[in-house]
Structures are given as structure tokens and as C-alpha cells.
Image (cartoon, rainbow, N blue to C red; front, side, top):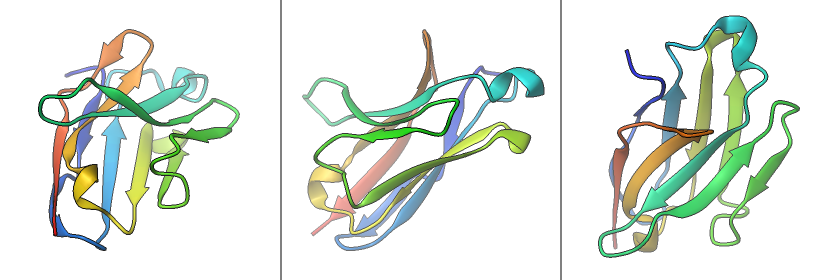
Length: 114
């Protein structure tokens, strides 16, 4: 099992919504709640960029480009972090990655068509 595993990507039209999930199957349940977890994304030909972060204390931080449209949340009992993405735009098209410290998931593709 990987440290982090993303799911929930897909293809939607502009204005649509998707909910991404980051699961942490190898984490010890009591430890997961202490982790800060972040989402990053990488579009073709571009560098990986920060999207959102949620701390152990549930403080959230967002990139300016997604502020007001994306919401990050966590369910510590299920060892999962979510990224609710609303009002999606074509420029949100990218592979989305979950991150904790030096660990990265395999990514999930999000494609938004105009």
C-alpha cells in the first residue's frame, strides 16, 4: 500500500464540480490527525504548483487561483483529506497530487473542457 493515494479525478465541463480524495492507508490512525496535508497540481509543460493545505489544527490555506472555488477538508477517522472543487475552469486541468512531508501520491487527472 502506498503512503498516499489520490482518487476522484475525471473529465467535466467548465462550471462543473469534482471531489478529490487523498487516502493514507499506511498511516497509523492516531498519527494521521497530526499531519499537515497539501494538494498540488501539475499541468502539461508547467511546474508543479501549490493548490491548498490543511494543518493538523484544520487551518486551511489556498492558492489565489482557487480561493473561493476549492475547499480542503479532512476526516481523521477515515485517514482522508478531500478537495472539493467547484466552478471548475479549463485552466484547472492538471494532474492533482496529495502531499505529506516527502511523500507524494501517484496523482489523479482532472480535465476541464470549455
